[in-house]
Length: 181
Image (tube, rainbow, N blue to C red; front, side, top):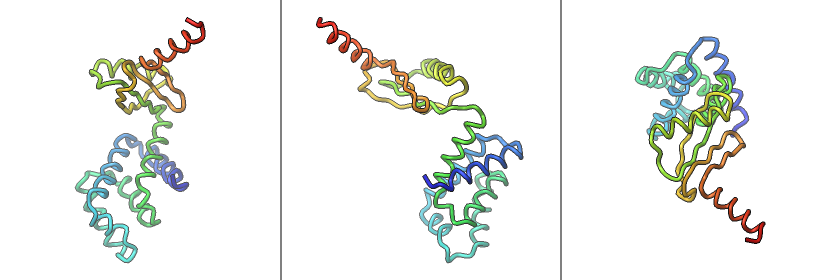
C-alpha cells in the first residue's frame, strides 16, 4: 500500500469525527464513488487526465456527488485527493480509512471460513463468538472452503481459531502417530 494512504485516511477520520458523521456511511459513500469510477472507463480517464482543467473535474465530481447523495465532507475529501493527484489510489485510501475507522470504533475484522454456506442463525452464533474472542465488535468477512470438511476457522488479525473437522482429524492423526497405535 502507498504510504500516503494512511495519512489521508487518518485525516479523513479526524474530520468525520469532528463533524460527528457516521463512519460506516462515509465508508459506503467512498465505496460508491470508487465503484462508479471503476465502472466507467471514460470517467476514470477524464478524472485522471492531468490535461483537463481542474474546474471541469470538480463539476463532474459535484454531479456524481449529487447523484450518489454524497455528504459534503466526503465530496471535499475526494476533491483533495484529486487536487493532490492521489485519486488513482482511492481504493488503498478507502481500505486504510476502514481500518482506521474500525479501530476508532473498537471494531475488529474477522474472517470466518466454513466448509459450506451457513444458515443465518449459524452466522449470528459465529459472529457472536468472534466478537467474544476479539473482545468487542467485529466486521465479518465470510468465506467458504470445502476442504475444511466441516466446522469453521475464525481469523482475527494474526490469530487463528481452527474448529474445522480437518484440524480435528489432523490432531487425531498426530495423537495416534505419537502413541504408536
